[in-house]
Length: 228
Image 1: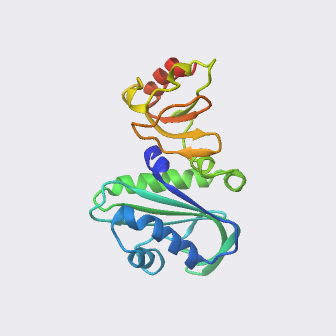
Image 2 (image 1 turned 120 degrees about the horizontal axis):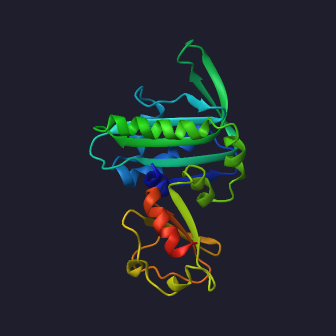
């Protein structure tokens, strides 16, 4: 789940938009990742009955489907500051309801991994059901902060690289030459106001803030090396 979140593509709409526009942008983001055309993805999300569509929490909607020939789940997050009115059929009563949505999640998972798909849905729904989710969602200052909402505290670590910090020895070192515990991965680096996805050639600079994901034991080892 954490790996999917770090790869996901957040989209912000400050202006007023409708559901069709939201879905079209999500399809544009997903198309190169899953190998379907924008129209095919849009059709699956809007018209097909196999795409889930009821709100999972107040102001939150999750659209999803599974397909063959993709290796891993892909997710697009969409935040709408103005809110988008969406009509949907209540799965219990059959009545037509309407809700104003500020958070959309568009998930596509491998067809052969049903349990994985269900786990992804459950993790998203669990976080979205938190009573403070709406406030945290709208208050997030950038896409980095939006992703952070879904990362478990025991599964990620932020490490400042400063001249007097335990990580000072990383300054000037390419990521490929860092000593990193086996299960850890640096998923992004904040360099002042910019957030980058590092490659092996990325050189760590003074003032960088590293975000690292991994299993708790490996993160503890990383913390002992570069944080504590």
